[in-house]
Image (cartoon, rainbow, N blue to C red; front, side):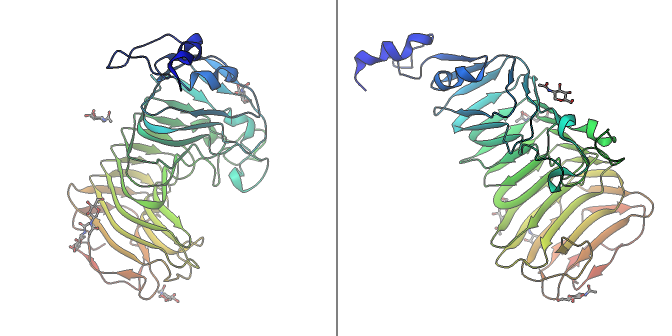
Length: 370
Ligand SMILES: *[C@@H]1O[C@H](CO)[C@@H](O)[C@H](O)[C@H]1NC(C)=O
Ligand SMILES: *[C@@H]1O[C@H](CO)[C@@H](O)[C@H](O)[C@H]1NC(C)=O
Ligand SMILES: *[C@@H]1O[C@H](CO)[C@@H](O)[C@H](O)[C@H]1NC(C)=O
Ligand SMILES: *[C@@H]1O[C@H](CO)[C@@H](O)[C@H](O)[C@H]1NC(C)=O
Ligand SMILES: *[C@@H]1O[C@H](CO)[C@@H](O)[C@H](O)[C@H]1NC(C)=O
C-alpha cells in the first residue's frame, strides 16, 4: 500500500507510532460498541469492547491482526434465538485477550430444556470458538446455551482465569420436564482438539465435561476447579484421532459424576491415547466413579473395542486424592483384549470411599490396588 493512503485508513482510529516511529495501518485503537463497529475496529492493534448486546441470531466474529490486544470494558450479552451459532469467534496470531473480569452472557435459560445438544430446540454452540495463539484471560462466561468453549488454536495458547458458570442449569425449569435444565451432553466447559494449549486457574460449573480433550498433543490442564458436571475427560475418541502428551495437575473436582475419565468409542479405529500424566488432583463427592477408563463408549462398562489403544497413563508426582460417594466405584478400567498397553505407574493415586470397580483385560497397573 502506498503511504499516501495511510492517513485515510486511519481516519477513524487514534494514531499510535510503532517502535520505529512510523505509523502502520494497524497502529490504532478500535472501539466496538455494536456489531457494525467490528469490521473497522478489528484492523487495529488495540481493540476495546464496550458493553453491548449482540442481536439475536447473529454471531460476534473478531478476525484480528497479528499481535493485537483486545480489552473487554463491559459485559456483552447475546440475544436469544434458536440458531446454530457460534455466538463468538475470535481468530488471529499472538493475540492478548483480556476480559478484565467482565461477562459474556449466552442467555442459557432461554434454550435449556434438559435435552442439551441431543434434542429439543437448536442451541447456538459452541458459545465461544477460540482460534487464537497468545493468551486469553479473565473472562466470566455465564449461561452458555450448550457447549461453552471450543478451542482450536493455531499456535501456543494459554487460557487462564476464565470462569464458565452454568450453575443455573442445575435446576429444572419450565421447559425441562423436571430434568436439570442444562443436563445431557450440553454444557461442556472446554472442548479441545488442538496442540500446545495450557488452561489454568479457571473454573467450570456445569452439567457435562469440565474439559473434553478429543485430539491433540502438548495439552496442560492445571489448577482449575470443576464442579457439578462429568469431570475431566479425554474423549470420547472417535476414529482417526490421536491424543498424546497431556498433563492434568492440581485441579479440584467437586460433586461430579467422575473425577477423571478416558472414554474411547467401542467401534473407533486408527486412533490412540498415550502419555497422559495426572498429579496433585483432588476430588470429592463423585457419584459414579473416581477414575473411569472405558473402551466401550457410548456404553459405560459395556463391550469394549480395541481400535483405540490406550498406553502410558500415569498418576505420578504429587498425590492425587480422590474420594467417591457411597455406591460409586473407586476405579473402573474396562479394556478390550490388547486394548490397554504397557505399564501404568499409579503410585501417586489414592482413592477412598465407595466400592472397588472392575479392571477388565489389563494387568499393567503398577503401584496401586483398590
Ligand atoms: C435471554 O433469555 C434469558 C432467559 O429468559 C434471560 O435471562 C436473558 O436476559 C435473555 N437475554 C437477552 C439479551 O435478552
Ligand atoms: C495462575 O495462578 C498462579 C498462582 O496464583 C500464578 O502464579 C500464575 O501466574 C497464574 N497463571 C496465569 C497464566 O496467570
Ligand atoms: C510425553 O508428554 C510430555 C508432555 O507433553 C512430553 O514432554 C514428553 O516428551 C512425552 N513423552 C513421550 C515419550 O512422548
Ligand atoms: C475383554 O475384551 C473382550 C474384547 O476384546 C470383550 O469381549 C470382553 O467383554 C472383555 N472382558 C471383560 C471382562 O470385559
Ligand atoms: C509412565 O510410567 C511408566 C511405568 O513406570 C513409564 O515407563 C513411563 O515412562 C511413564 N510415562 C510418563 C509420561 O511419565
